[in-house]
Image (cartoon, rainbow, N blue to C red):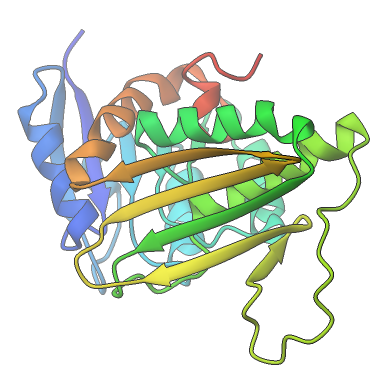
Length: 249
């Protein structure tokens, strides 16, 4: 078996450039294409797998092009709403054998943090999420923050846990953050940060804090490369890297 041929969409961006370097350093992968804004994707340089790190407005079109070409895709761009995922799911179903992974975060530690939060959520009355990123990030809350809130909210619903307590009735400036599946999510944008998140779980007389910090984009590469290697074995649409790491049981 030869090396897996990989193309990167969004190759000029911070994450895309890091992905290109990681692919080039891997003995079993070959970087065959770099694409960015305004480039004709064409035949995707003959890639077996495409890694897509662009921007939320461009990502659905880029991924649809790959699926239509019969090429597996690993998607790291955030902003994938349920409506967008439903549209993508239909596109993938019309392309049998094509695998697409949409992952809010590729850092293994962040994936574990989300899994720990999901498991812990039913045991605590209160849960809030604080996600912290660099100020060049264009979306809020982050994909990781939103995904964590969804997982936590679903776990609480399944366990029959009621809404998080909050007596706030006056918040004209939105100080209490966004509500995602009933969970408050607070976004911080600060120069010097990369990607960080805390999940705060509170009960009578105690608090559990789960925190993950990515200090360098290299932290995402273990997950990205694992996804590139595994996506051909996972036809259809998969949301979340945890499904590739055996954490979905």
